Length: 273
Image (spheres, one colour):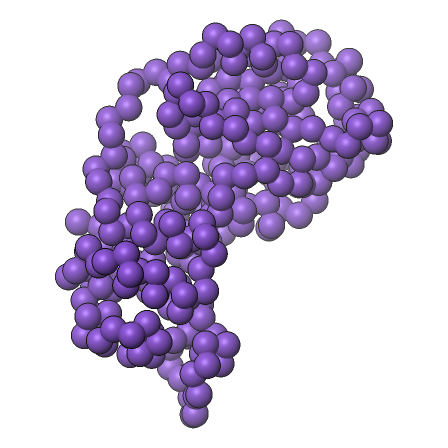
């Protein structure tokens, strides 16, 4: 049985600088970060109890204990909520084979004059409009954007700061799938990327989580050049697990004009699931 809670605690412990946590150190330390007994002392729990948590012998600590550990590890609100969720993990619900995009969202994709698409919690594209596919051919139904960013050289070349982009996406993926790592589809993707991408393997081992929220990014598009875009991610209330993503630019900016040019260059039909 996976020890997700213990793995997360160990990963966060190893990333805390002892000095920043107020721990006085002397001599050579053979392991990175804090020692288990130091975490226990700072959190106000016994060293034996903390050891049981990391080893998976106690998988249901109280919220108060987890919140104390979150303070020791200096977790933000998103990471703290993720930590709390690990103690109440349940088997992943069985999903329907086909994820259905509501008709209203399909119509929105057709009429909105911005790159827009729908993806599931594994970052696989379920539906996309023509302009989104013009921004990246990998924003197409059936394509997993995380796999593309990690393994497709053309997708990597789009991002002027690929390292930052992939770090954010891996952290967002962990937040998105949450405690459902036993879901067969999630497990297969994690196994594939762990085998084929050293970068994914490194980032996945860090157990970082990031909110599925908006943000800005810069692309170097092969047809229209540099683009400074923002993305918004909006969960679809009637279809849990699906998210509407929209890219937009500052009005009247060079990027806004580039998007207009992309729209005029793209002559293929709209695509959707």
